[in-house]
Structures are given as C-alpha cells and as structure tokens.
Length: 154
Image (cartoon, rainbow, N blue to C red; front, side):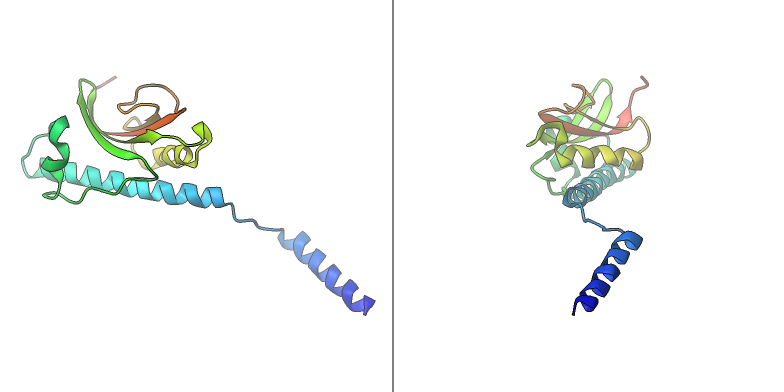
C-alpha cells in the first residue's frame, strides 16, 4: 500500500514540477469583462455619432445628445459597473465619457479595465483621468474614461 501511495505522490509531484500550477485570477477575468463592455459601449456611441455625421447632421448639443443620437442612430449602451455615459462639447473638442465613483480607489478593477482600452484606441483620443474631458489627473475616488470624437490640436 505504501508503494502505491509513493508512486502517486511522485507522479503528482512530477506533474506539478513539469506543468506548474495554473490559477485563475478572478480579478483579471472581471477586468477583461469590464474592458470588453466599455469598449463595446464606446464603439456604439462612436458609431452613432459618425452615422449622424454621415447623414449630414451636425454634432449634437451637449444637453440633448441622447435624443439626437438614439434611437435614430442606434441604441444607448448599458452602463458599465455602476458608471454612466456622458457627452461633452467644449473648446477642446467633443467627447463621450464613461465615469463614476470607484469603490476601492485606484485599485478598483474598473480603473484597470478602462486603462487597458488605451491600446485599442488611437493615441491622444482616449484617456483615463478623474474627470470627463481629460481633466482632474489620475483616477482616485472617481474615474472618467474620455473618448474624443473631435479634438483641438494641443
């Protein structure tokens, strides 16, 4: 009986050494899911904005952007993890933003998810800060991911 246990122990030890132990990181899965949801939402908003432009429409006003874009040019995407969508028109340009409070400060997986989207967007047209429109510095109690539709030269 001890011989069988020894063989199984050696076999198990060999599998661990040769293959390693792979752990599934739940935080990484959450981050990936949130990033996908946010990216899809930004794509829907950008598509609606560009469709309105292609049909001859001008940029929607900040106070009536949802009615100007939806349902005529798509469907407003669902909010991501307690955040909300907004739209802004300012001297620096026109943007869509996904923003809201962070439950665990800068360590919140939402911050990591939104930051990871920077590699999927053109440089200088996407930024993650504390406030919409790229203002406020690094995320802390709040996070704001801004995707610029039009941006003035800096």
